[in-house]
Image (cartoon, rainbow, N blue to C red; front, side):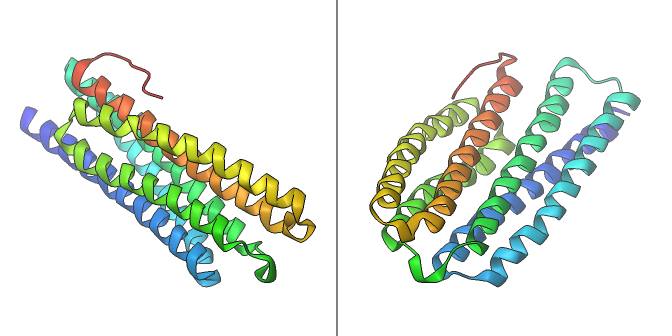
Length: 217
């Protein structure tokens, strides 16, 4: 009985990691779509976000089933609750990448600002690294690594404020940049929130290992 439960917990974690990798892929595609002004890729990101949403529902149902039909120990209960909560964060992260894709579709080609786009890409790359590091640390349930990853969010927050100011300055100085400027503000906002949710999952990872609720962001 216990062996079967252990197997189900392992399968649950694997499904969570697969969902996380789907979100990471979505984020990578979003940055590529922005750089290439690839409308088809942007539309694909929006379409595939439905698959991420479906993964969340399936994982939450699996968690509920385990809680209802098994008698989890304290550590098992923490694990299931961590997965349930973290998959909700992953779903929101997917939504933010779909948000970037939608903003790309609204960009006006003649008034794009390459310098601003490069800055957004810079912030996005930092968020991608955070996500990749998180997915590597999660199976090891490494709380120390989770704290290190969450600390990287501060650099993205700083970029968010700096880039937002740069965008607003350009919008004030160049009336033709207002439409695209608004979309760039949406994009950098999505990147910032994406990183915030990574920090949230890091908090859950610390809770999983230590049983302590901490605030890392």
